[in-house]
Amino acid sequence: QRHSFPRSSSSAEMLAAIGAVEELRALGADTRWQGTLIDAFIATEDVEALVKIVRGEGAQDLRVRAAHSLGMIGGAKASEILQSLYRETADDALRSAIVEGLMMGGDDKALLALYRAETKPERKRVLLETLSMMNSDAAFEAIDAALDGKAP
Image (cartoon, rainbow, N blue to C red; front, side):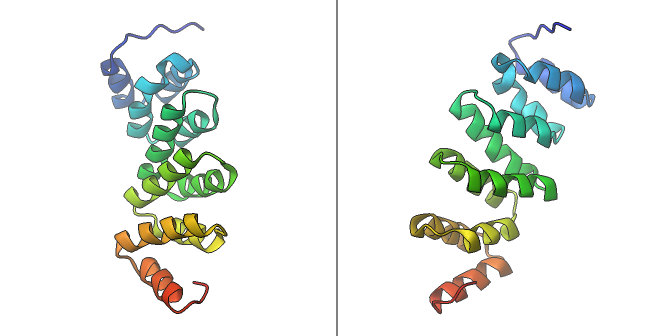
């Protein structure tokens, strides 16, 4: 089935508004429309479509934006996928987008899990700084442990 898509995001917004997830996914298979469709995937909370963009071979800026968006959507599934992506990627921009997305989504538990598993000091510092900005119990637990020289 062949799809044409106008060059505006209003069509994607309309499809998102009516919950046309399959139609949006079909359009998203064409990398030309991924930038336009990310907001629609956010609106429909389509974790799978965003993961496909992040793991795809599209432009890095779109992959970063999709990773950031996954964190903002939140939820157990997105959290699990983002933690896995963080561990898998060698791309620092993608890793930063994951951390920022998890922070924006308020997922301190995922950030704490990444902090605990991280072995590289610079990455561990970034995760701890991010946790400290969140003012959550998990953040204070990690900060106290770091100050005491203990594992959180």
